[in-house]
Amino acid sequence: MFSFVYSDRIPPGGKFYYLVPETDVFIESYQSKAALETLVRQHYAVNKREPPANLMALMEDYMCRSMPEGTCKGSDDGRPVTTRPLTFFKVVEKLEVFFRGRPALITTEEAEKRSAICFSCDQNWPGMCVSCNGLKQLAFRMARGRKVVKEAWMGVCRKVGMPLNAALFVKDPSAFGNLEAYPQHCWVRKGTK
Ligand code: SF4
Image (cartoon, rainbow, N blue to C red):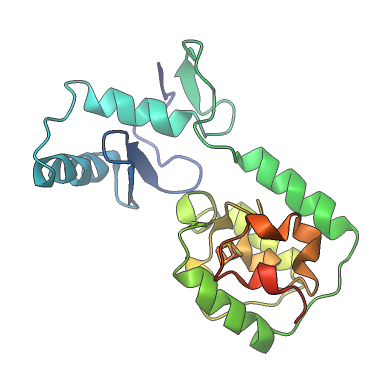
């Protein structure tokens, strides 16, 4: 199992989070690990389930598996180091490689319509991007300074694999890969139409 090297510090990304395996519900807290534990215990209680005795250790282990190297100590116990297909470094790499080609961008007004769709989409994952200033600043730079009103709610899109604060502005989203893989409501499927 993994645990934080410095258990009293706010981890990269500025938040604490846990995916409750029994219900597949993702819970997060910007306050503290203890606040997250309270939320998770409440979730177990509401679902009439008994939380595991080592809940705090499991939560740390879960977070550590998607944290940058050096944040945690321990061993992977033969399980994947990340519990998610996206890691911080993969996202940064994809962002930099994609925008190196200086793709054409749309205006902020046009991106606001896309942002409204992402706001309520379950593929918009706030776990990595929303409070991580380094990643956000990089995304703003790639979008050449453009920002949507709801930028604070724009996380990393699990499908695009990049922060929405940059991806929203790409004029031709067909470059994001297999359009059929995107949800029906997604603006990416519509291409430049
Ligand atoms: S799948 Fe589409 S609508 Fe959903 S967050 Fe990603 S880009 Fe936005």
